[in-house]
Length: 71
Image (cartoon, rainbow, N blue to C red):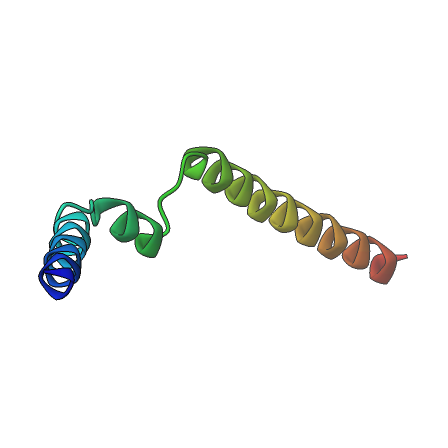
């Protein structure tokens, strides 16, 4: 009788674990792998603004170099 209860408990635990795994939502994992997150729009905008700032700085440096060469 004790072995039967242990066997039933083991089967129940295995079934519960399998059910939890089968019901898990994989969409969260897929979103994280693709790089999407809550602040994706903001971080993309920040990256774009940093790129623009870098281009402006490069342009200013080029103009300053050109002005120094002319003098």
